[in-house]
Image (cartoon, rainbow over all chains, first blue to last red; front, side, top):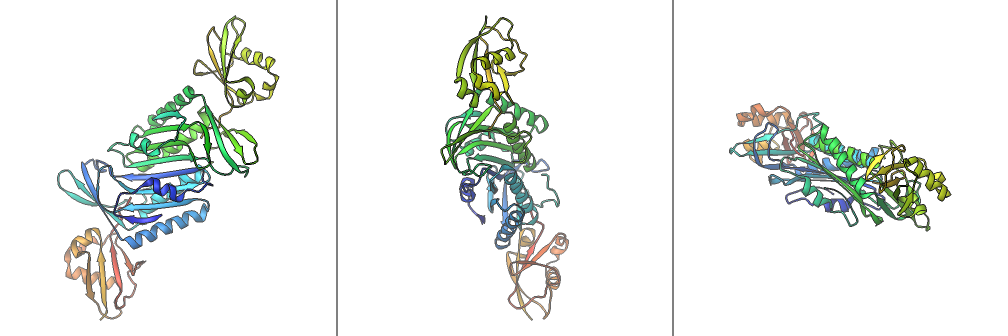
Length: 143
Length: 143
Length: 81
Length: 81
């Protein structure tokens, strides 16, 4: 349920893994490669790198922290690495809980924390042949 | 993308329908039948009824309102009616947007509004043979 | 005497059935329709709280006037999601 | 003279390669390791901002002392998600 993978992620499998009969709300977030960068440049794909051991540990830590305040929440966090094309899923967070409020809060907290704390790197590749490493802006919880 | 259906809902199909290459974040909410009622009674299933025409119109209206403030958001809202068992998906909301913040906000707003405004009714069926119509508590945005 | 089609949901459907016809006085309102139904089916009495109405697939108030052929939906408090 | 394994990511990997060995003075810290690397690879100079370190798969500070066989990861600012 917490992994760095180099193959396509199946969000449904993650949902099935975290759901129990006590769960009434399941929120899934998929981060997808989009066709344009924040500065508007045309993107043809991304390449992700990760420190797999530390990244996975950060996912577990993020989930533990969320469950410390919302013990009924169950989480899955998976990030893909390698070459991705526009439309590919880069990251999936699934949060399941008895009620929807906790599920939404947990999913949102988890992806925000991942952006801040997971040792993962993204290289954007542009249509014009250029490429650039993109850093998550700190405290940028609202993107 | 806005429908009352009497068959299982496929959240992946809805995600595919709303996503475009401009979308970087896709948030899906699945409301699932859970094994116990809010008062703790064991639930064996639910039956949903809807005024299909008005319910669908309320979904469109909810999406229009959300898009009035977040024009880049794309939404799907589908509710199932009929007999559902524990674990079955009763409702799916999908919100796709260039950035995750809008996707989360839109999905959450849509399901909260649906609970308040969509003419849909839920009968809980308990293990002891009893059944009861369950009303959404007004302004109860945090369940 | 316009004839109105009434469609009912949830608790109200259990009392009234899914749909029925009712004849009302000229110029009758939705409120008059409800009063007429309660008269026929006293079990409706306690079920007014939170009740909403729609006429021809649009939500409407209790003062809405009804015409021949109108369809009125009786919508008890919602429970979807 | 402990030998340390250095693993680098993203921009830093482009300069240093994925991994290399480096011999340091006894009692050297992570800060000393970075200084030694910058000396060998002047292109690292501008890449200190936001840099984090891990030693043997745990985040650590620049004052962490290094021992024979330690593996130090050089973690530039993150971009996941």
